[in-house]
Amino acid sequence: MDLLELRKEIDKIDNQLIPLLMKRMDIAGQVAEYKVKRGIPVLNEEREQQILDNVAEKCGEKGEIIKTVFSATMDASRALQHKIIGGGQELRDQINEALSKGGRLTADNGFVACQGVEGAYSGVTANEIFPDAQVKFYRQFEDVFEAVNRGDAVFGVIPVENSTAGSVHESYDLIMKYRFYVVGAYDLKIEHCLCARADTKYEDITEVYSHPQALSQCNNFLKNFDFTGVNYSNTAAAAEFVSKSHKNNIGVICSELAAKKYGLKILKRNIQNNNNNRTRFIVISKNLVIDDNAQKISLIFSVAHKTGSLYRVLGRFSMAGLSLTKLESRPIENSDFSYYFYVDVLGSVRDEKTLDLICALSDELPEFEFLGNFNEVK
Image 1 (spheres, rainbow, N blue to C red):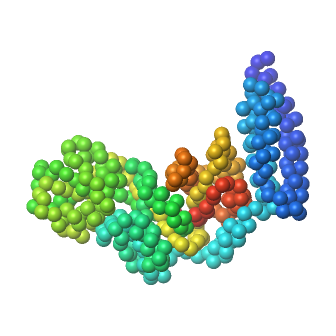
Image 2 (cartoon, rainbow, N blue to C red; image 1 turned 90 degrees about the horizontal axis):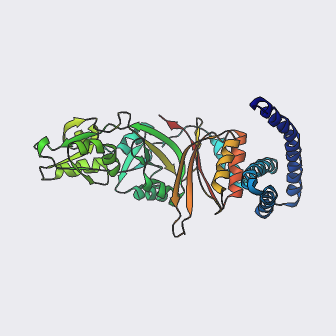
Image 3 (spheres, rainbow, N blue to C red; image 1 turned 60 degrees about the horizontal axis):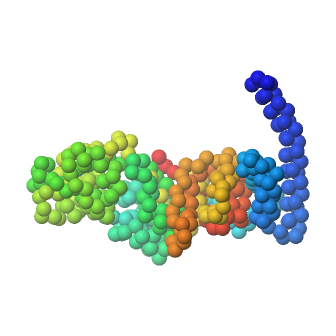
């Protein structure tokens, strides 16, 4: 047979499969109603595994391929059952309560915590998001989380990702540890400058201080001029250090604002590798706030140690028509190569299908945390 004839054969088979799949979904709906009346959970891992093992045995060398098809069918059946049963009721109630309050993100003249000192990019971002707030600086990233935890600050602003240097892993580890809500995000354009004290000559500089992310974002410049990058806790804190140092051979990578704040001269502007260098900051809170314009969802979850577990979970997002913009794995503390997954998804919990999926996953997965649905300003 030629290609056209082969395709016609496939079409015939598909037309036979469609009514059978529809019938399977109808029966899955009846199963859900049965489970509701008797308080039986949707997921029965043992039965699913038995079905998949049976499929593999019957299909011989094509067993693994056909198992993938059957697993997707079972995932769709479970999604339908969760919709009927209304799974994840506790999380559903929590989200609906936050939605009922609505509104815009505001600090109400309270404190917002940032890492670093005045002139830091985090502080610039905090002022952009919360022009009515008082920004309070802390030495370490974890100090920002603790300030929010104690109630010393209403919100915290921390960097999580840069378009050039990638993820800020320390931030993600702290998100995993504290499980605070993500209630906002802001993409800040980063323009780095090489700065030094007024009496320091360009040709005398051998060491350049800055945060590791900033050094990474400017590593081409550092290599070209044979500068040695020296890690510091924050770009603005590094600027403050250089301004107070008596060394005449050191410089700093920081913002123009930080240079002015600490009386440094700017030797060269825009030294970052990428002219469209941007850092994404998130706003953390102990309370769930869902902005009226929320369009991004953040989640943390773990999956069972089984082949295809992550693949099947990610398939559920595709099934719901949702696009993932971030997938970050971080090791679970004191575990034997087990991982948490941090996921950003474009979507809104105001959409019924999206809310159903999140609530379903909260019931099914070993660990699941809804971190928030927020507006990201670019």
